[in-house]
Length: 228
Length: 161
Image (cartoon, rainbow over all chains, first blue to last red; front, side, top):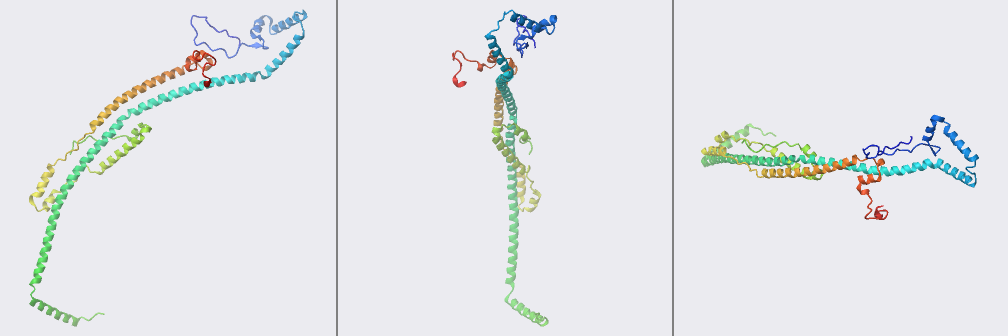
C-alpha cells in the first residue's frame, strides 16, 4: 500500500482515540527506493524511466570518477552481499518469531480481559438467581402455617374421638353389666331348681326308681343280644 | 362442627424445592418430612367420629334415665377447639423476613449495578492492538509503574517480575 498521510490536526475536531497505524509501511522497490518515485516518473518516462535514470547516473559517476573504485568498494560489496543474503534467507522467520512474541503478549492480555468479563457476567447471574430464590420465601411461611393448622385440626379431631369413645365405653359397660347380671340370675335359678328337684327325690322314690331301672334293664338284656 | 381453623393451603413442594439454596437443603428436608408426617396423621383420623346409636341403647339399658341423661349431656357437650398461639409468631417472622429480604434485594441490586458498570467499561475498551502503553495504564490502573515509590528500574519489587 502506498504511504497514507495521516490526517492529524487537519480540522478543529480532535481524533480520539487515534485511528490505528497502518499494518504495513510504504512500499519500496529493491528495498531502497519508494514506489512513489516510480509513480512520479511514470507519466513522462513510462516503466523503464527510473531504471534508465539510475543506470545513466551510475555510469556517469563511474566514468567521470566522481565515485572512485578502491578497496573500500570491494569491502562494501562483500559486506552488502552477505547482509542481503542473510536477510533474504532468514528475514521472514525472524519476523514471524517477533510477531509471535507480540501476539502472545496480546493474547494473554485478551484472555485476562475475557475472563474478567465472564466472571462479572456469572456474578450478575448469581445475584439475579439469589433474588429469585428469595422471592420464594412465602412458601416457607405457608408450610409453617399449614403445619400449625394440621396440628390443631389433628388435636381437635382426637378430642372428638376421645369423647365419643368414652361415652360409648360407659354405655357399653352398662349394657354388659345388665347382660352379665341377667346371665348370673339365670344360672343361679337353674341351679336352684335342679338342687330342689334333687332334694325332693325322697329315698323311697329313689328305691322305687332304681328297682324299676333294674327291671327295665333285665327286659332289655333279654331282647338284645350282645353284639361282638 | 363448622367454622373451624383456616383451611390447609396446597403447597407446591416441587417449586419450593427449586428455590432452596444447596446449603439449606437439610433444613428443607426436615421440614418436608415433618409436614408429611403431620398430614399422614391428619389423614388417618376421621373428620367426624361415628354417631352413637341412642335408640339401641335406650332399648338395651334397663336403667330408665341413664341413656336419656347421657344423650342430653352428649349433645350439649362442646369440645373446645385448641387455641392457635403460633400463627401470630409466624406472621411476625414473615414480616421480618420481608423486611430483611427487601434489604438484601437492595444490596444485591447495588452489587449488580456495580458489576454492570465494570462490564460496560471492559466491553467498551479499545482492542489491545490499537492501545498505547498510556491507554493500557488508563484501562488497567494496576499495570502502571509507580515511579515515585520505586524510582529505579524496574520500578517494582524484584519479586513481582
